[in-house]
Every structure is written in C-alpha cells, then in structure tokens.
Image (cartoon, rainbow, N blue to C red; front, top):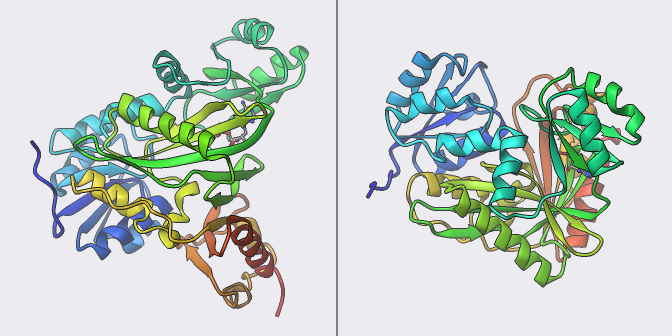
Length: 380
Ligand code: AMP
C-alpha cells in the first residue's frame, strides 16, 4: 500500500492556470512545496509556486526531470498528452492516472466510456466526415450541436445545427476535425457535482451546484442547488459511479443537464477541480483544492460540508474594457470575496478572477454576487 505523501513533500502540477494557482495556495497553506510545469512563464500558478518549469508538454525529457523533482504529480489542465503522463509515471505516482486523462480529454472517448458503463447521456454520434454528419443528423434530428472531439472547452469548437441543410457549413466551420454530434437538450437547468475519491476508494461530494452559462462560458454558480433532494441524490449517485468507473484518485466534476421531465443527462466530466466548485473556497469546511491535495497525497478526505449558501460570478476580461474595475464598491458589500488569478492581459472572454458571496439563502447569495459584479463597472 502506498504511504501517504505528507506535508513538507513536493506536489507537482502539470498546467499553470488559475486551478493550479488555487491548488498551490492550499498546498502551501498545508506546508507542501509546489512545482508547476507548463509552456508559460510567470503563470498564475508559477507566481505562487516554489518552482516554475517552462517547457512544452511534449518535451518528455523535461517532463521526466520535473517528475523526478516531486513526490506526486497531478494536473490542473487535462489536455496533457498520454505520453507526458506516462513519462511522469515512470518516476512516481501520477494522480489521477494518465488513463483518466486519456478518456476525458476526447469527447468521443469520454461519451463511449460513459455510455458503455450505463450512464445517461444525450443521444450522440461520432462524425468523421460530411457523410457521417448527414447520416447522424438523420438519426438524431435537429436542433443538434456539433462539437470537436478533442481540445474543446468553454464552448470553443461548437456549432449549433438548426436545419439538415446546414450540415456542410457546420462541418467546414469545424475544419473537418473528428467531431461528435449531440442532440440539443432543451434543459430546465444545468448542474454540476464536484466530488473527490481518495486512494482507498473513499468518496465525498460537495453540494450540487446550479450553473448558468453565457456565450457557452460559465457565468454564475449557486449552491446548494434548489433542485429537489431526490434529483440531487441521483446526481450524486451518478458522480460516485463515474469516479468509481474511471478509478479516479483526485477531484472530478460532472456537468449535467436536468431535463424538463426531471431526468439527468451527463454533458461532460473534468477530472480536476472545476470553475463551478470555486465557491467551496469561501463556503465549505474543505475547499475543492484542499480536497484534491488530500486525495492525491493519500490523506483522509476533508468534510465537504457547506457552512453557508454561496454564489460565484466569473470576472471575464471584458470587465476591463473601460478601465480597472471598481473593486472598492464590490468589496464594500459584506459577504463578498474577491479572487484574482494574476493574469496580466484582460482579453475578452478570458477568465481573470471571480467573486464569491455568502448569504442566508442561495437566492440571496446569487443576488448579492450579481450586484457586486455590477458595481465593478460603476465609476467613482
Ligand atoms: P460544453 O463545452 O460541451 O460543456 O458546452 C458548453 C455549454 O453549451 C453547456 O454548458 C451548455 O450550456 C451548452 N450546450 C452544450 N451542449 C449542449 C447540448 N447538447 N444541448 C444544449 N446545450 C448545450
């Protein structure tokens, strides 16, 4: 049995964005050293890590050197190649294992895995040619969504198809890459379950989160969800089943559609902390980042109990279009917390930070976080 990786040890993080930054902050609070690896310098994670290695993910020698210098390797970015994960695994534990990444970094592999394991998904079909697309549209019908199979996130590489006649323009828009056609789901809402599985199979889920997207990007998350306890219970059982089927050691987020009839359909899974779990940092006994650290280090999982209803609003680069946001106005509201990721360039659509608000109810927390974000755009 692998011994636990104790405080004082070094955590290696492949990827260097805001997820790695918040993981590194938790790890450092608990006395770990943190090394991060990505092609970037002065990255959000690198700014708070003990060591930042800037090299390409396919530079397997650099990945091996990195892995030799740490006690356990984890990810904050799931598009690391299987070869890089395997190179790291030659030198010590990689958690979650490379095969979890391999399955989840391609939509088609992920859907095939989930459907063969019996999890509920929207109808889908593999599309590798225009003929495939026409045939799949005949079967699935319109409206539908065509998504690239690999390297898509936040709605990138997606086209809505309203009419079978749009097949060739949709196929061209995705530049002929391997894709998945999905039925468009007229959902009642979107929810997520962020949960962790420890080295010995122990499992803990955070409260189910209600999510609202804008332009395919997460905008506002609220927890606890206002769904019925029965549907929330089913969502958590799906999450538990997926973590077990994938044999995850670490944190995994399952995003689900709730249909108008109360059925749950899995949209996608991410084998790492997730944007919809950021509110756990201010609202829960254990944050999703501390939970990832505990899981990958073989420590007991922490309590995911939520201490107050909470809401999170993302701050995209667009907020900077008229100058520096009005931080003082938002922070004057009691119960509002600011998290910024140390990114220099506020490009439109880029996640720069988020606000969290705690209140007496989920609805009040949502109203408060939206009011706080609106105040950021007010002038003095
Ligand atoms: P994804 O990158 O697949 O998570 O898609 C981003 C967002 O697009 C989702 O959170 C939904 O709001 C929307 N979306 C994606 N796929 C579908 C679908 N099949 N039906 C309805 N909405 C979808």
